[in-house]
Every structure is written in structure tokens, then in C-alpha cells.
Image 1 (cartoon, rainbow, N blue to C red):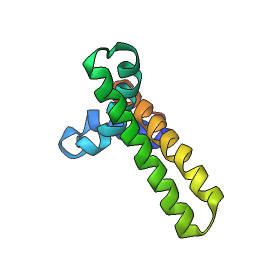
Image 2 (image 1 turned 60 degrees about the horizontal axis):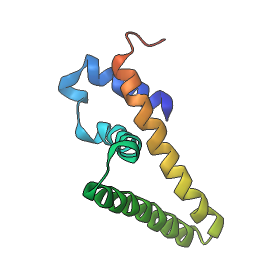
Image 3 (image 1 turned 135 degrees about the vertical axis):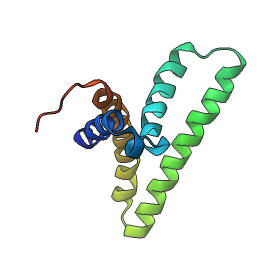
Amino acid sequence: VWRYAVHRGHFARRFPETSRRIAYVLPTLLVAFLVVGGFLIDGPLRDLYALCVTAYGGALFLSGMHEGIRHRDVLVGILVVPGIFLTHAVYGLGFPYGLVKKDLRR
């Protein structure tokens, strides 16, 4: 996931006409929202931030339940939740790294 994200970020910089899509940036925006929001958002926006984080967590939980039911295995359902979150986080960090990296190893 890291390597894919770095390459996707690199392609977004080098080939903007085909590689700059909002879907590629969403995990990076999620990571920024989770980190920055946790430290900087205060007052009435804090409740909105908590609602958004709760909604994201709920979506992860529902995905885990769905996969657990689909595979008829509780462990699969439990492991899907951190798996999806870690995939989003790793991609969200790798994409901007690829944007600023001058050259990738071939």
C-alpha cells in the first residue's frame, strides 16, 4: 500500500492531466483531518469533529460486520476494521511523500 501510494503521488505530480483525482487524495485528507483536528479543533467545531470521527469509525465497524457475516467468521470481521484503517493511514501518508519526492527508484 505504501509503495502504491508513493507512486500514485509521484504520478499525480508528473502527469496531472491523468492522475489528479479527488479519490487519490481522500486518504491523505482523512489523515490530516484526524491528526490536525485532534489537536487544533476546539469549541463548537469539536462536536462536529467528534461526529465525523464517530461516523468514520461506524463505517469501519459496519464493514467489519459485513465481511464477518459474508465469510461466516468473526475473526475476519474483527480484523477488517484495523486493516481498513491502517490501509487508509498508510496510503494517506505515502501519497504526499510521492508528491514531493523528486525521483523514484526504478
